[in-house]
Image (cartoon, rainbow over all chains, first blue to last red; front, side):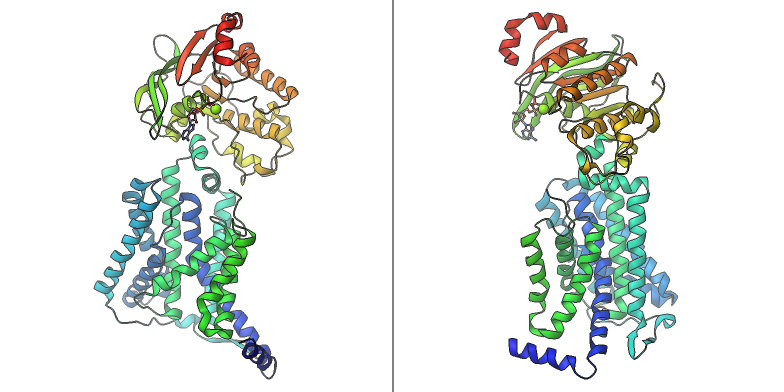
Length: 302
Length: 241
Ligand SMILES: Nc1ncnc2c1ncn2[C@@H]1O[C@H](COP(=O)(O)OP(=O)(O)O)[C@@H](O)[C@H]1O
Ligand SMILES: [Mg+2]
């Protein structure tokens, strides 16, 4: 095994190695950006509400399908991104208000109900869009291959990176520069005391859940032209989001950014070098980081 | 306010943690503009009384009336919006918020029943000048004393008419306890109503208009501070002094 690995690495350093590395780096980075969009909402919801939202991956996938439908009707990709995010936000808010809210403090009940919604939404996908995998076209305006020197990369992935960066910046501004944002952070710190300072915690929960769901839906639509649409993709991608939440620390924006990029890169290089050990290369860094920092990179000591 | 001039009236409340029956029928009142002390040894239910009033742990029976209004069914943030503020045991400063954010989080103007000049950031910082230099520090960078000042200051920023203080002197150096006493006097002069939970008997006697003693979830003594100070039997029996 070590020998095979060494040979591969040696190969890579000959010939077109430089471009190979750049491409891999770029792919890992852009995949990390996509994972960030998925994981940030999960992390927010986990950090603020202590809800393990198993449905999150399914929000992502349903978002993709809704995006596809909007794209088919309107032909406007940007509308599809927004629409997918908004519809999923409404779905999330509905589920939070009428189901999760009644189960506050009942962790097992919440996990079970979010898992129930996985099954429900998966059935909805089968019912509405059918079981066959679907493809989603890239918008023409961002579908080209960009060159920097002899290094070429698909511009769509660059677009995903730009959107993820804009989302991260927007979230940072929201969390740090608005009154509501400081209420959200206060709720992450100490939800009971936040309510004792007059913070309307049920409202914070609804907004956070809606925002997290929005990001999942938006990320889902963005993933369409890249990962395609396929029944079951939701549960395939969910573990990535959980790794990000756990490695980055629950509710931490900085942690989610770094952990997403880490996971994207590790996954990409891992699949390149050890194609048979995909999940192993994903979970190994998580195990190592958790052994050193049980609260995650930017989580608080409990 | 009700006809007896009570700012807060706790009427036979029974509060549980799961199966554990902690407050076993507590009644007491805080007359408007006075400091009411609640004393008692560790684990007797003082914090649970505070938690019941602020809505963290709802009583299963009984009522809590604030300015004539039944607040028992309300959520904490609604109770706070009516004009009650909490300085909790252990301070519970938000560690990831800056001092300024901690202060402005619950900032609101005084309600219709408010009296005196309203608190704002400048006035509160004049009262706690130490916080001024720390405005952009996060809460977890403060010393214990600074945290207690911040806990007081952020409670005042909500312009409350009733202040709930849960063991404010706990863990403070004597000098800081004195400083806190001065602040309490200033608040008293402004006719703020205060429910002061303490284990520090001397401090409570010094600043209160009336004292209650809690023992195993019941009020076992109620008197003026002077009367309690002279009652060595009650002090020995319920406070261990
Ligand atoms: N969250 C809780 N869950 C269960 N029991 C609790 C909880 N908080 C306090 N208690 C119990 O309730 C009793 C009263 O506690 P508390 O009100 O904190 O007392 P005090 O503030 O007078 O020290 C104690 O026996 C304590 O062990
Ligand atoms: Mg206590």
